[in-house]
Length: 140
Figure (spheres, one colour):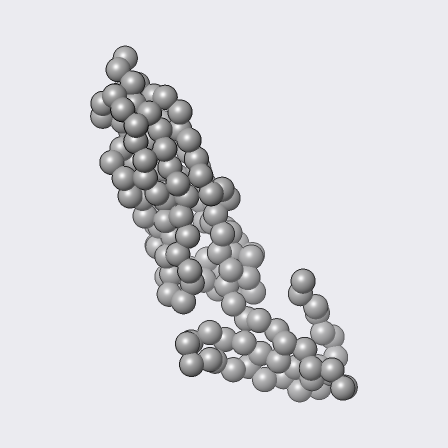
């Protein structure tokens, strides 16, 4: 829970040895700590494309949300795994506080069988997170 302090008599913004910014303010006899950090999350943890004919393509849209109170810089999105690819127009850049980035992923099985992969985001000083992707290719 974030608390909005309306009467700060003292405010200090500091950068830790690890590069993270934080601040604290003093209001009367209280000291309030204010995190100044981005916080990224995916719209889901896993996605199953289901059974699709080999040689076809189907897409899904996912969202990365920055619910923190600082900009997430240099956020890169990638997809790993045979049969999956990103077809978003933006795959690298900043995500402002309270904003989102849409990531579009295609499943394109080349033959019959099970497929698995990951949609990832990474950024400096932010834990890398991923969506587990899966699908099955079938012979038409």
